[in-house]
Length: 172
Image 1 (tube, rainbow, N blue to C red):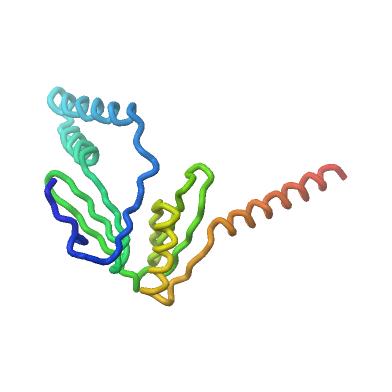
Image 2: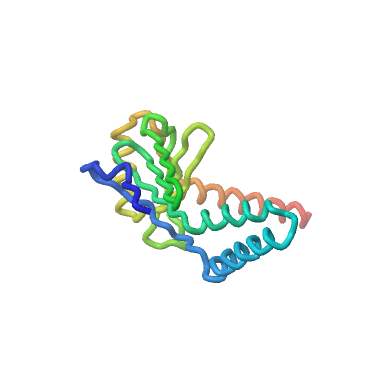
């Protein structure tokens, strides 16, 4: 996997997304076992499609995805043994950016990038997230920036009020 990253020539600040949910060891081991079972099944049964599924599973397990926020926008690069894939969401195409802090990931902020009907959720350090919000406004003045934490607090409060009203209705 010696593919050069598309953003390698950039000299401006770049922010790499942090992977917060790593696969558990049993998932990785189980995936390799399943790949072996599919290969054996391809040899021993008449269902040769098992080879295709085994190949896809192995390719998925050995691939590596890197997501970077740059001056150009949101850049995704997927590296595989046989090929690579690059996707760029330009700042002009990104319509909304929502930031939210989660208690289960201290020191991290999740950012939702919305382009048309697609949304990508990525995690960044608090410092990087603040810089990304500034960069987004600088590169696209039309981008809408939302505070997901305030929205969720308001939503939870609304749900509690509904629950209380429901309980009062039952007591009568």
